[in-house]
Length: 255
Image 1 (cartoon, rainbow, N blue to C red):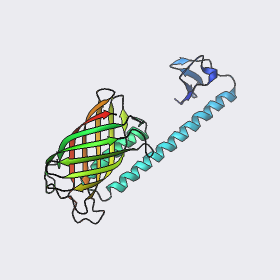
Image 2: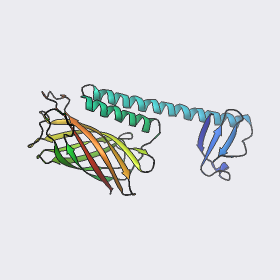
Image 3: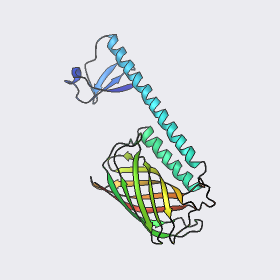
Image 4: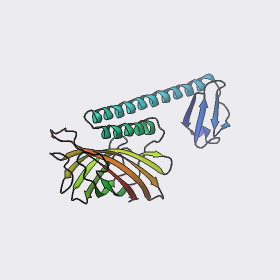
């Protein structure tokens, strides 16, 4: 069934104050919240409604195509020299981005700025190369407004029990699955100081990719889990790229 939803004009406010559903296949009709309204008279009016519906559909398809293409190119560039863990995270992030944002199933929107505290484990994968697991904590600042397209900035700092420290800054895509669930893939550039912890290659410049899942327990507080992977990809000529995964429990408080 072909349908277009348009904002109501002043001439229709007596019948419908929110939106109109315009059905153009079969017997043309106009509905508001499932209630049939008096139909416009004349072929010109129906032709105008058909044109508006067609124009809206073309624009939606163009936007969807551009979004999907952008996400695919981002994923391709990120996974070209990535290890399997990064490829898995990027694939999951692309799936969330395409299903959630590009197809409109869980659209992003601007949100309140928040401060996030995370506690978990550094180098959490059991069979990781030269594993040096340790407890870790992170503090992250997340502005709620868009920076580029639907991407929002993030900046954070973390440390481990083995005196390793790292700072990062990057972008994230918040997708809202209902009123309470937020899934946010992200990517950030990271500087790393080894301390007594794991050697992640030299120079210690890393990429940090991952996914956060959060649940809103109130209007101001969200709790969740996160999984991030940090590695250098040998993009700056590093000889080693052991990489590490960080998993934790998060608490986000709106500011």
